Image 1 (spheres, rainbow, N blue to C red):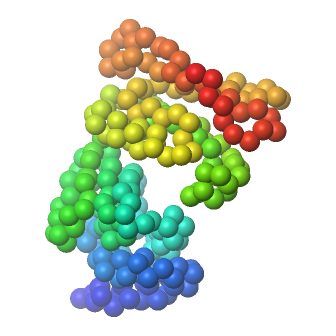
Image 2 (cartoon, one colour):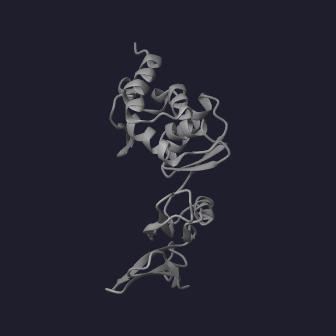
Length: 242
């Protein structure tokens, strides 16, 4: 019989704190949320070891050390609503829910999404909404040296292309697109249309054209350019051409 309370305490003392994670809200959340609830029964005995725990279907629960460092880096605030993409069986959402106003958890595997809902309900966690569907979307944005400061130096650019292979529930895609558009560093986001990205690279600049298809479920979909982004050599920042 495992004493999971002692296991949680040992996890925090031997993995989280030694990783220089000292924020009390993160430590308290990871002490409070029973990690064993969010893994398959066959994996409960190793739920607190210092490695990723298999969830099945090629998915895994991040090791406590890795997960806590990620939380420490993003500095989640109490008044924020957090988007948790790929929530698995719900552990990440359960911990994050202790740190903020609410969590929108998106899980593309319907069985995992249902399990996540049940796991969260069993702990009376009522500030998490679990949605299921494909989580692909197109986006482009600038990455700043200080993630929270839009006036800080631009150090890189992010260009994300979607998949053309699936037709998906628009509520999921609209939600992700709206979330991405709300971020100050986002220059473009589209969660409703499938397509692909065409990159044209020269010594002087890089241009990405986001090509979208009107309907991927039937033959004859019309292809068009939804937006074009340009990076000029030696000039930090994305320019949107259309």
